[in-house]
Length: 246
Image (cartoon, rainbow, N blue to C red; front, top):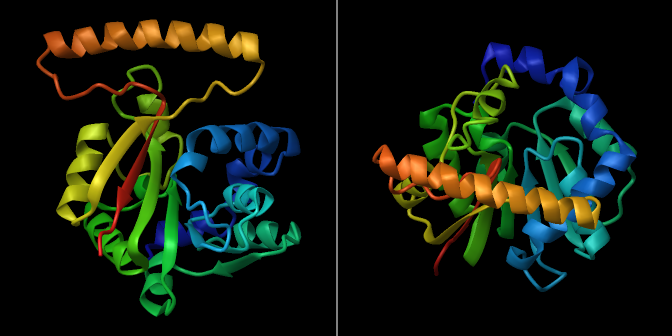
């Protein structure tokens, strides 16, 4: 699936605004700590597991996987600039493909133990989301999982920025709507967490996390008073982990 505006934006995705953040070594070291803290416990223990990063961007998560010891990692992205950046990193055990996500899923002939979908689902239309989630499940081995990260629309401080920071964003999610769409596409054992972004200086992180927890308690109370009893996660981003049963 490809629209004209996507072709225009993705053709120069690094150049037109996201390159500085995603090609900065210092920033990557922070991201690496973030990935380890939030993702590692949900990834396959077997380092020979096949993992695919769909919409891999500039390759940060693929790099994290390779540095963690995974031997069979595939990164897929529709942006030529992104894939050129990924290939420039010369990572062993990583294969990068410049391909439309749906086309890749249709043509892939060897299933993965896990598929990672970081900051991609919000770029799709509602119809595309249903189609892609079904195709992702077809490309996962029995008892494999998908990990999906996206901005959390329940956070009143950064949800607007998260929704509109990128011209190609189409939709936003809360924990409730994420669980809804995963159930609709037949995923099992769905777990949704608010990601922990406090991975810098330990003392600063502890203080920031404490304040964040206090704020989140008040946000939950406000939501409860306004009748939104089902919303309990208010962190900046949500991470969904969902499994395919055999």
